[in-house]
Length: 115
Image (tube, rainbow, N blue to C red):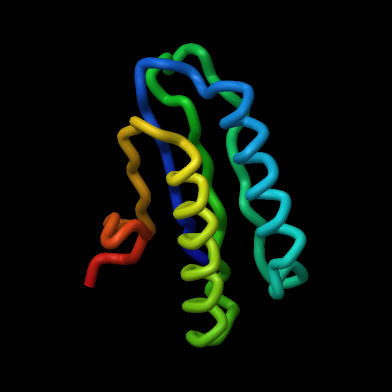
């Protein structure tokens, strides 16, 4: 059983059409180039839920425990890079990225896991 990487972005305005297209392009590119697609989940975003009006983007990607540590770290870093590109495409949002009880932090214009 693996753990998941969870991500949300909140702001008072919805995603623009341009932002939606950019996000879809980023996700498609990363999913298509993911080296472990046979062994792990690809990047997933939840359908927009208007009952949570501030949440403009949310999702989770499972990181399987069956991978060796090197592949697991590669997978985690790969999806953090995907999230970095998405964050750079979505301006003025409050982001939360975490794996289990470990938050990712935004440092030097990229996501990385806290030590």
